Length: 81
Image 1 (cartoon, rainbow, N blue to C red):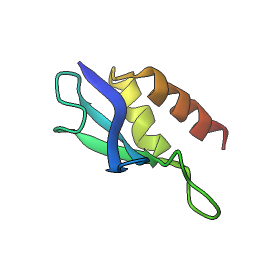
Image 2 (image 1 turned 90 degrees about the vertical axis):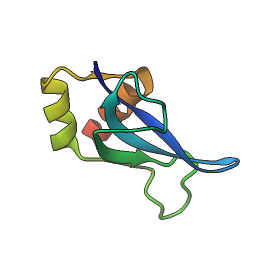
Image 3 (image 1 turned 180 degrees about the vertical axis):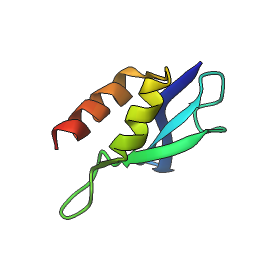
């Protein structure tokens, strides 16, 4: 099954997440099909907190991809902005 989920990056105590489309059997930071955005939970000042390519996210959802709980929240938040 294809899923939209977060892949963790960044350094210790400074997380950074890529929003990826991947096979559900792949490891969290493993192989992915496409990166459709990023999420920076510790963004300050002028840094961008959330960036999502909504067109690609909608395409993958229309193809049957399932978003994880957190990814679904972020997609909803990005749609508002």
